[in-house]
Length: 235
Ligand code: NAD
Ligand code: ZN
Figure 1 (cartoon, rainbow, N blue to C red):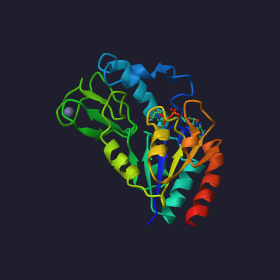
Figure 2: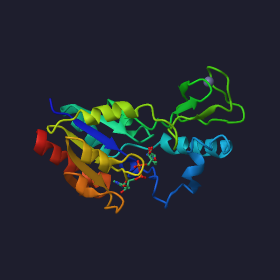
Figure 3: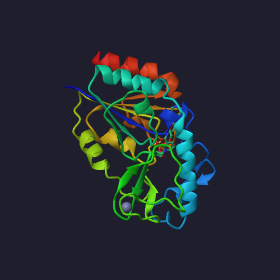
Figure 4: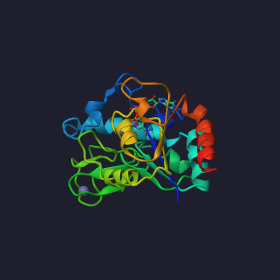
């Protein structure tokens, strides 16, 4: 049976009030991304790393899913659809979606580099001066759960496998991703499925000719056009 794979990025949650990665010219809330999410330097920047992610957890706590998350849920109710998301927020889950794979981790988790334990703290505050890993009691080894630059993303292999096993009957829909972290144009060019790209606007660094169908605009405004496109193919 034909299936749909959604691949989403920060842009799908922008209309819910969570700023995207590149919305401030490479600064994420006035923090250098390279400083707060870098596997090679995070221990050196320990306090600011935890300060930044405490703020992100507080930011994600009360936000609500938008029309794009609800559109994904409706399509999941009708078709065989899975979501590979770069988003660390939980808005797909809040919208009732299932089969959501967070390839860059989740904001609610902490990850202990000393023993490998990944554990959930919800939207709570992590006190980096006293809090420790519940399994091995390490303090300095505990980092936020989201995958950092230069960190191995353990869920990528299952994502590559799903994408490479698509057929021309399948549809892969990319929403709100610049393609700077995961090369979505390269994926679109490589896989056999039909592809849709939906972003706010064109970006010279993302070659849109690699995709079969392109929709521009805010995620809340393009959701119905994407749903209609899917219905036109599968409905
Ligand atoms: P990105 O910030 O690099 O790119 C955002 C993309 O979304 C752009 O292509 C832009 O055109 C589009 N966009 C912006 N506003 C939009 C809107 N209102 N509607 C539709 N599209 C919109 O995002 P990325 O490719 O996901 O890479 C950023 C990395 O940072 C990811 O690895 C992700 O884990 C992390 N991140 C996550 C969140 C989140 O979970 N909500 C937020 C910021 C960053
Ligand atoms: Zn541990």
